[in-house]
Image 1 (cartoon, rainbow, N blue to C red):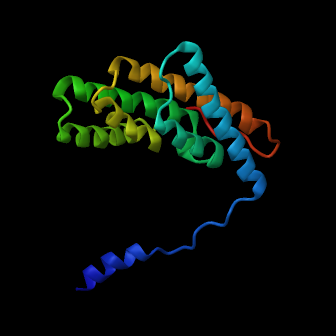
Image 2 (image 1 turned 60 degrees about the vertical axis):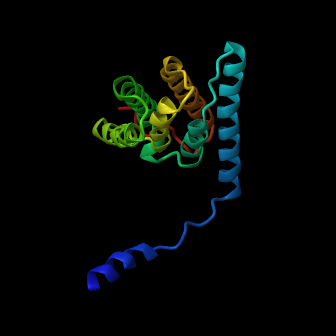
Length: 172
């Protein structure tokens, strides 16, 4: 019984939620996220390609509001999208889109991102996109990389305009 109590006791948390960021930080995150998705939208319109994907919104949160996070670094953003998209496309090609393939593809993407030190939480959605009915898997990798490169590029510009911020923390 003690083990059960200890197990559930860990779920109550040990810390308070972080304090709200200063308004300057919030506005800077707003500018970066808007600029990043805006750039992808313009590229999508000009190229007549469907480049907007929901995971890019989550990537903006990391690049512009959690800049120092390992999940926000270019290696993780670019590598995470590349690895996860490949896992999804390969899973579909080899096994189809059965529920077990979807489940194992997401788990495999997480494991491969960890092995390659490219963990990027939003990229974990790529196998789901690859295995979703109606997805053009030939376009998934170019779309993922175009969006990731665009967001990293906007992140380099916006985050380094501030004298008190440097992005990225590392490349390799």
